[in-house]
Each structure stands twice: as structure tokens, then as C-alpha cells.
Amino acid sequence: MNMENALEVKGLTKHYKGFTLDDVSFSLPAGCIMGFIGENGAGKSTTIRLMLGLARADAGTVRLLGEDPDEGGAVLRERLGVVMDDCGIPEALSLRDMRRILAAGYRTFEPDKFDALAARFQLPERKMVKDYSRGMRMKLSLAAALSHDCRLLILDEATSGLDPVVRDEILDLFLEFIQEEDHSIFVSSHILSNLEKVCDYITFIHGGSIIFSEEKDTLLEKY
Image (cartoon, rainbow, N blue to C red; front, top):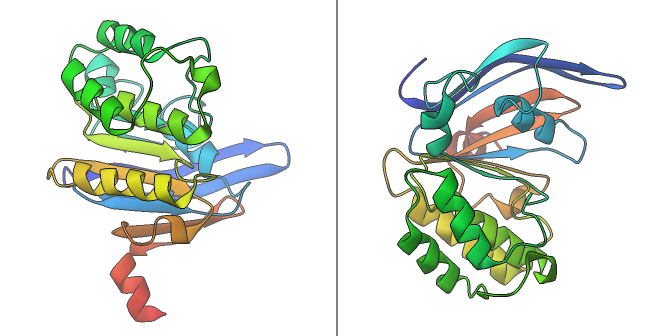
């Protein structure tokens, strides 16, 4: 593992009936933001699930912050912030419930940071998640992901379906997070324009295969 890389994916392959993620490889240098771009069904979510160990690859290797995700254990989990497209937060929870769950689940949980993000996002204290808009759910997920010792933020379609004001709020938060040299972001989207202004690297996936993975400035020079 190159310790200058926050994320390394090599030869990642997964066969499903009717779809194959084929020999996917890319790397994200530490301190950078990578946009993982592709149409719906291109393999973005499959790649992220394999990266996180939520599904078993048929071939290939993944390193997150220098660790094998199957072996990194609690120490690695503390350093990852994960936000999936469906948010994954039970609808019967409130903000207060989330605070208690995070405090129990993460040794490095910082309640003051969580409260500050919740206040910044104007998240209601007692309202249930089931009554949140999509934008509010995404903000809650980000507040949770960033309120412990997160070094690598991994997001699946975090900006899709959001109104432009909310999307810009989230992109501003990305830029603040990345100011720390050891912080990195990997974020997928099917719409390049949602991420283009904040990304350092663009990786494009189509039909389960990587078409290119390059620095954004290099791509702009080419095209």
C-alpha cells in the first residue's frame, strides 16, 4: 500500500447474473476528493459495497487508509465516514436517539461536533427521521459520519435528488473537511456537474468497467 493513498482498489471483480464488475482499479491520493461518476447501473454502488466489505468480491483487493477492510476492525471503522444513497438510518429515530447511538458505537464520537453540525443544518431535535426530507436525511447522515475520527469519507449518490441550495451546502462542507491533510473523500454520482467544482480526481465507470481515472486538471487539458 502506498501510504500517500487514502484508497486503493486493484482488479476488483464481481459476477452477478446479467452484470459483471470487471477488473476495477483506481487510487485516491490522501487529502483529495474523487468523484466516482457513471450512469445508474454502471457499478458505482456495487464497487462501494465491495470496498466496504458489504459484499464479497470474486477477485481483487481493497485498501482503505492502508488497511484491508476485512482486517481493520474497530480502529479502521472509527476512521471511516460512510453515507449511502438510502441513508440507512431507521425512520423511528430522532436526533437525540442518533446522538446516543453514536456515543455508544464510536469511542472517538464528539458530541459537540455532532451538535454543531446539527445546528448548522437546522435539524430538529425531536422530529422523527421518517418526517425528514431527503435533504435533511442526507445532512443527518453527514453529521453522524463527521462527528467521530473520520479520515476517509465515502458517499454513494450523496448529492443526487437534492435542491441546489442543499447541494451547495454539502459541497461546502466537503471543502471544509478536506482542509485537513489526512482527510479524503470518495463520492459517487451519476451527474458530473454535481461534483465537478470540488473534485481533484474523476473516475468514470461504465457497464462495470473503468473508462478513465485521472486528475480533473489533466482531463480539462485533454478535452
